Image (tube, rainbow, N blue to C red; front, side, top):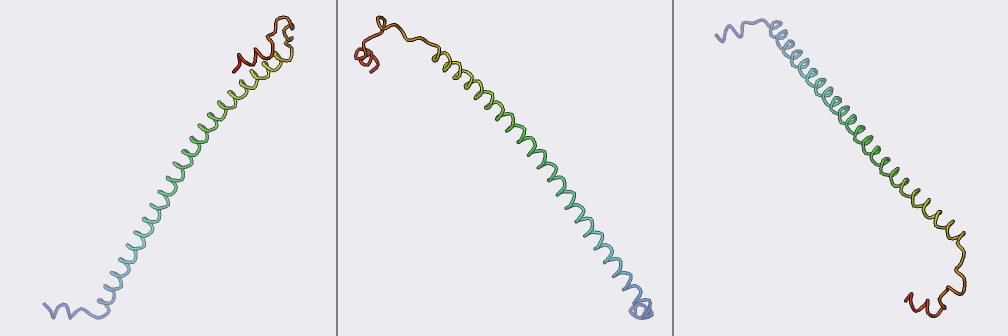
Length: 108
């Protein structure tokens, strides 16, 4: 049997070694290309999910800020109304007013 293995001609052995090398190199290149494609696909997926999360977060923050603005505008309108009311108010006649000392004592 050893003589049969050794009886293979040199060019056949070289051809078999070259074919095995080429098959291995091709399989390796295919593996690397598939691995890189998988990484790129995963990166794109992560990027899309992150974009959607940022958009959702931005939308909720915009909604919250709009609510705060509406509340501030309502407060401002109420304050302006109170200022206008105070500007139009007539002071009470002096006969109806408390003396300043008594008023200060009551406010303490």
